[in-house]
Image (tube, rainbow, N blue to C red; front, top):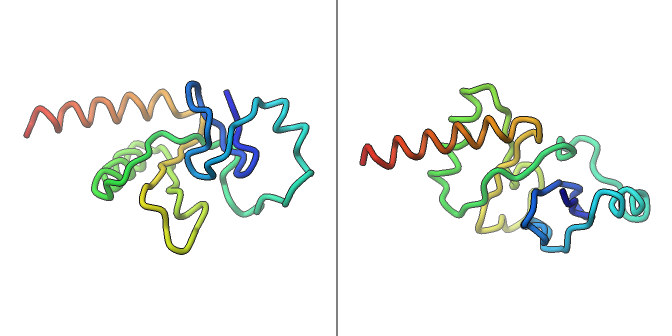
Length: 119
């Protein structure tokens, strides 16, 4: 697992560049060794322990994913909520707690397979 040295989000292989910060990811030991070297992370942001489950430019899909996850008890956060920018980026990243990734992937797979065959 690799960590972004800027936003401290963790990503699974094969991701090597942080999709939000556009910087190379580092392994956990490098990230911990670099802690305290730069600016402090805003303690009010729940970014620690979150991973990206989806990156998309489709706002409808973002809404579907958010509703599905939250109805299933999986909290999710959008990149524009965690890392507001002006103007906002074209794509949205959906973050969830690391320990809920397997459940979220299963829910999303089942939901989008059912809805794809229904159309």
